[in-house]
Image (cartoon, rainbow, N blue to C red; front, side, top):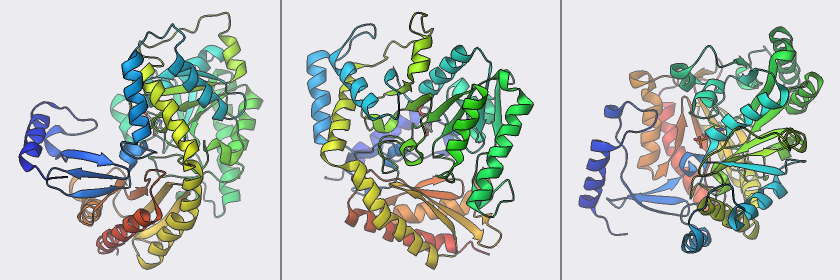
Length: 449
Ligand code: PLP
């Protein structure tokens, strides 16, 4: 594409004058003006191209501008751009069928939302109505969305400003061996102690007051932390024992990210409710939803479900989901994520870890990886303090700037970089991205004690 700095300057000027950005101090940000995107790359108006290891916000699982999905959206727009949610509409029916065929177990009914946070809102409302209980348990080191209830169950600093004492949310510690809260030295210990901690929390909160436990199957933004073997099965057993609804949030982990259709498939666990968004249609049109078990669906068989959205199952978004799922099948993208994750990304990151003292740990699966950056491998002191900003965050800012200089757009959260490219990123592109990370990690190494 031809550079056009003047056009870029106009886009940027209108943004700075009128766009109010998420999670940001408005005058301290400097958003890049993006001119275009295709596959795993995007470019700016100055002609600089970036390999996108972020998939946007971990949602463009099929990359940018997939021609088949763009065509499906165009066809749906020409045929029936929109229609109210109370009607049976082909794109909505077909999307629900394709999703239900892939969700685990008997999660066969789909309630569509506009995105992930409202999927979480509705899943928790369903759980409370189904059980008649008020409380929800959720994990520290989690993110469930920016709306009121979804941010209350979130277990990272984004919750603080909106936290409400009446939210009915209790946080607990999920397993994370690298920074164990349980003084564990093995995965087995971490798993057993995390389950004991959860059961004690349930006992002291009162099992009869707890409607739901919500967990990201593999926590994403909080650090891509695959749970130890047996943990999710143990949580499932506790939910069964105490009549608690298990909600697995697969907004980020779902739709192929982990190299399986859903992360739950890796652990053979079937939740009662599962939230999804992002990868369901690669975010080409906003869409999320809740997959509902037969038992919970039965609660609302003859009693109205008190909730809805004008755009529930929006035909344009659903047509994009149908096309995306079909593309993922035709092009074997879930298998691609599994095989290139295991043969290129995982080994590539481990090789970087051997050479760079700033890398404390590498973990992940499929196209879902985290690299934990530290000042000291022995003490595991993070490269920047928890929730650092400004000067305290300078080492991570320098890391990110070095990656961008090398042509890679990195995902950065606190002291971590996540490697979460589109699932159809090829081997050569992945290696190009790993080489850029190599250069950027040399900058991070300068901050090692
Ligand atoms: N749940 C998880 C696990 C997420 O990662 C996110 C977003 O990153 C959400 C929920 C919220 O989704 P949305 O931003 O579409 O509301």
